[in-house]
Image (cartoon, rainbow over all chains, first blue to last red; front, side, top):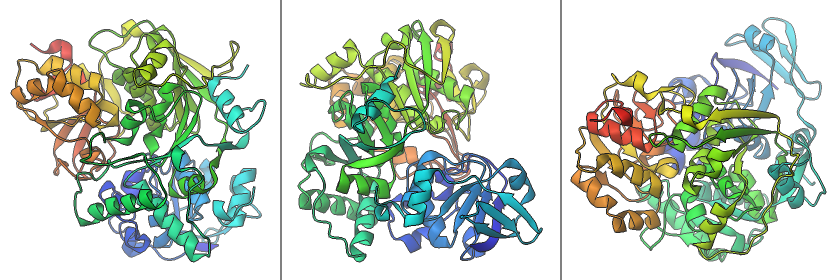
Length: 160
Length: 424
């Protein structure tokens, strides 16, 4: 996976800003995408390109259980969110629904990656290559079951 | 040496024992969807059908129940249509427990879960809503899930969980009269942060919790979500048995932790030292004592939601509002029709109306910024709800202060954030 970075240098990016409450009644995935990140960054939908990555701090996706949040990001083109940590429901929604990859990175990678950097993510090697800065970071490997669900392409494709 | 959560998950996964970190598929006892997650689940079903899957039944319609709460009364054409989708779903799949707006008992899903005893001690309960944790106060493992996971449960009757570490919060002694469970849980979230219990279980115990009403315990478990917790739980006791017996339920299989149960960490709080607490915008962890905010001028007070509109929450607000009038616009929305009725029978509605308060129907409404009384730009609200993220209750530049019903009602009277002890 290759793409460029949209970086939000903040912790606790919650589901209310990723996809605000009034849009919870919408279940058309393409329409949800037009409201992605609306509570934090009104220009997100103009800026995002297919294959982009979001980079953020700790506890990304905290708050509500709305699957609308990873759906809106996914249908905007986001392939992975690289964060210091994730809230639990966002994490499992992203993985079980196969909407995007929640990738945990460490503090040094988080600090080093800049907005608009070009990255290449290699899941099987647990590696993130910063093509702009010519650097390599380690990602935290997926736990066993998560890795299998990711590989299967979501919970419904996974056979326990 | 297993705690209650480990024991419930071991039993539900058919294992003798489990340890924190183990990933297990557990059999689910009860599952809930509402008017937001229900249509979301149906969208997942559609996606699966397009891939060739046949979906014409759920694993056990008796174990599924449905609430209408986020966008009722229907806020607009889309939300009206979502209720139709939900109705067609329950008809098609033979789901009888559908609490419909305008047909007797209905209300916020988490409130119905205990008011109607939809979940019993020892059970594994999942719901398509993050505050599903609430029902853990009855001694069940209760956790929120998204649409794909709930769809999986509806078709397979099971789901994976990583067995959580448990943080134990021990309350020594009763809370003073001017302090509510809401103050305690805000204090705890302020202490450990909004990711302080991420992926973990928050268990509550100690003499202070034993003496607490069931509704107060439900306030504690409800807001474990705001600390990032997977679930919140209290060991079932005589109070829970009486609560369930009052609802005609006496048969269930209680689970209790071993005497030497292990916890990752134990936090202790002294009841007598607790004070009214308020969480400032824009995070539930942004807590201070209410008295430090006495200069904050307000536009509105909101007494509603699964967190802060149970019967005792309304009783607390009424205690303050009796014989007084509000200085700012104030709304009370009982969390379920059964509570609305008890508030009527107990004379609370008259107290609210005499005070100038508007009483509305049960709904998640403005708590999640959906509809009915959302905030304008720069408006400041004191609320008995659970979250105050940017834009949570309306305009992105509005502000919400989270507080107990006592503090919210006292603040409604003065128009400023007010500790109930300071009310003249």
